[in-house]
Length: 201
Image (tube, rainbow, N blue to C red; front, top):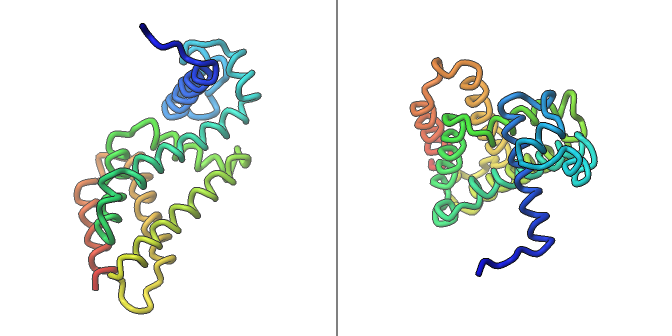
């Protein structure tokens, strides 16, 4: 006999379906073209239910930003392979996972970029989510470097964390603009070389 879901489980499942639909629409059409009705239809529900759960388009966008960052964190920073590695190997795995998503133009990475750009423009309500996320990722990268003991004396791990994130995001932006002009395989190897040459001295 199939176990019946509780009301809380049904609510969680429907919320997840709506957030997944919203991420897909944002990735393909941008946040301007995302509507509560579109999200409801894509998820198999009504626009009224989406409105009831998230309140407004702004509320839904904030929930989407939170979900995107949670998923990215779990896939990239908290996966088993990363946990079993250390030092520069962890940084290489982060870069590889990120650039793999860029190459696939996954809904997750495209929607993240679209909303990140909107957060300091048309959707300032999203800015706190990306500010907190960036701070957490930079702190995580800095800790990886510090805990590894591989960095030379006086190495500024915080500054490297900012530079490391800038490298990956800069590459992704160039790839999204003109994928034919960006060799992601060679770029990944270059990022790895930078990690080795700067940290493993």
